[in-house]
Amino acid sequence: MTTMRWWRGAVIYQIYPRSFLDTNGDGIGDLPGIVEKLDYIASLGVDAIWVSPFFRSPMADFGYDIADYRDVDPMFGTLEDFDRLLAKAHALGLKVMIDQVLSHTSIEHEWFKESRASRDNPKADWYVWADAKPDGTPPNNWMSLFGGVAWQWEPRRRQYFLHNFLASQPDLNFHNPAVRQAQLDNVKFWLDRGVDGFRLDAINFCFHDAQLRDNPPKPEALRVGRGFAPDNPYAFQYHHYNNTQPQNLAFLEDIRALMDRYPDVTALGEISSEDSLATMSEYVQPGRLHMGYSFELLTDDFTATYIRDTAERLEASMVDGWPCWAISNHDVQRAVTRWGNGDASDALARQLVALVCSLRGSVCLYQGEELGLPEVDVPYELLQDPYGRTFWPNFKGRDGCRTPMPWTDGEHGGFTGGAPWLPVVGTHRSRSVSRQENNAASVLNTVRAFLRWRRSQPALTEGGIRFLDTPEPVLAFVREKAGDRLLAAFNLSATPVDCSLELGAVTALHAPGIANGRLESGRLFLPAHGALYATLG
Ligand code: BGC
Image (cartoon, rainbow, N blue to C red; front, side):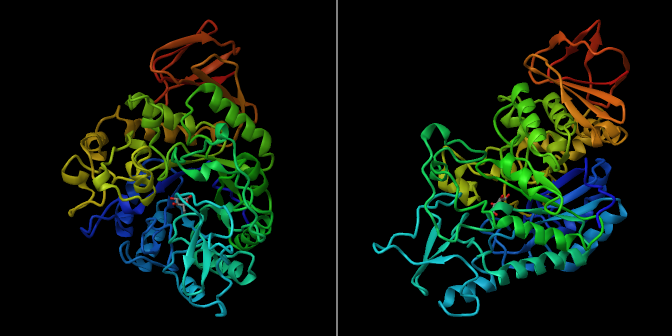
C-alpha cells in the first residue's frame, strides 16, 4: 500500500553506471563505484537515485539490451554488490530506483535464442515474428528509432522479427500472456530484493498492432521530434501502430497491482508517443503508473513561453497524475550546452537546477548536472553509441552526455586508473568535484544549498503552480500550499532584465545560494540567468 508517497516532489539523481566511478581499472564504472560515492550523493540533498541498467548484457545499447533480467553484468559487479548498494543507500536515507527495460531484450537473451531457432518451439511466439511480403521485403513500413527499417531477417525461421530500437534489441510479443507474466515475475524479483521503484524504459512500446498495419506518412513540416537525429526516417511517419496500443493500459494495471503489494514503491514511466502529454495523462492514473517522465523539456526550446505553455498543458492534461521533469539525461545533449548558446556558464547551470526543481512535480537530475558539466564533443574515432555512428556527422549520438564523471582534476578525472571508455576532457576536469568541493560559491555547493532549502519549502515540493504574465525572457510563477505562497522568478537570458511585477506584500526574500534578484516598487530586477524566490503575504 503506498501511503508515504516519498516520490511526490522528490529529487531523483540519475546514475549512468558505466560513467560514474570505476573501481577495478577496466575503464568502465561499476556498482562498487556507486557504493563508494553514495555519501557524496546523499550530501547533495537528493531523495533518491535511479540507476540506469546494470543487468547482464552484451552492451550493444550499453545495457538497454538485456540478456538476463535477474543478474548483474560482471562488468558492473555482482548481485551482492547491488545488495550492498541498496543497504548503504537506505542507511543514508536514499531511495533506490532501477531501470526496467521490459519491451525488448537482447538477441543474447535465452528467450530469443530459443524463439529464433524454429517456428514451433515453446518460445516461438515470444517475439514479434512475421513473414516477408511476396517480394521478400519486410511485412510493413515500420521504422526503427535508431535508423532504418524495424525488421531483421532471421534465416532459421525464414521470417522477420521486429525491433523498434537496434536490430540486436528484438521486441517481445506482449500479446502473449506468458510474456507478460514472465516480465511481471522479473519485476517482482527486484521488488523482493528491496528496491523502492522503477524507471520503466520505453513503456509505451510494449504492445504493437497485432494486424501489423502500416504507419501513415507524416508531412515534412511535422517531422520534428525530441532527440531524433535530423536525418532519421523514423520521423517520416506517424507512429500509430508500432507503439502506444490500447492493450498497454491493462499491462500497466498489472504492474501496478503487483507493486501495490509492496509498501511505498513507485513506477516512473518513460513515455514518448505522438502525443506524449495525452499518453502520460492516460498512463499516470490511480491504478496505473505513479509518475510520468516528461520529455518536453529535453528539447531545444529555452524560452519562458515554451516552458510556461508546456507546464500549463501538462497541468491541464494530467488531472490525476504526477509529473516528473528532467532537462538532461543519458540520451540528450547536456542542458547547459543545449540551452546556453555556446555559453555554458555557471550562472546558467545554477539557474537550470533551480528552475527544474521549482516546477510542480518530481525531478530527475542527471549525474554531473550538479557540476554544471557541458556536453563533450566526442570525435568520430572515439564514438561508441551506434545511434551516433549511424547518423554522424549531422547527429553525433549520445556519447557527449555519457562521458565519465570528473571526480578530480587529475588524469581521467579520477574516474578510472585504466583507460576510460569515453574521454574525460579538460573542461570537465576543471569542473571536477574536488575543484568545486571547497568553494562555497561553486555550482556544486550552490546546488547543495538550494536543495537543502527546497526541502524546507512545502510549497515547492507539494504545492500547486500558477504562472504569472511576465514578458520574455522572464519566467515567473507562484507555488502555493495551504495558504503559503512562494514566488519563483527566472531571467532566462544572459543579460540583466527588469519588468513590472505587482504582487502585493512580500514577507520574505530567500537566498538559497542561487537567488540573486530584487523586487522594488512593483518592479522585478534579475541579473543574467538570475533567479528570485519570495514568500508572498
Ligand atoms: C533509453 C535509451 C535506450 C532506449 C532503448 C530509451 O528510452 O533511455 O537509452 O537506448 O530506450 O532501450
